[in-house]
Length: 105
Image (cartoon, rainbow, N blue to C red; front, side, top):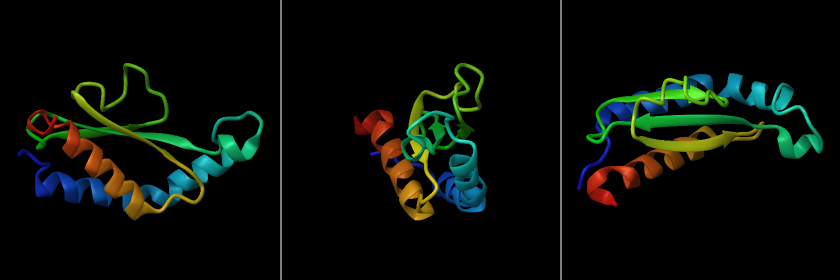
């Protein structure tokens, strides 16, 4: 069974915990500008990895085909809301990516 490398897990955790306050601000004050406001206060976060779980990248928002995650095959996408818990976001992303690695499907 292949799992994400410990370095990738550490880097992703650091990314999330270092940026969660800014992302929650963006979700709350920018978000998707439409009604109802409470349901549209979010920001997408995509983190992707290679088949071996040793390379990764990420993107925020809808970057279509130009974001940093686009060049990697396995994507975990979640929404950051004003009340997102960084540990829950991290655990969700790691679980999703580990499930997507080729030997784990």
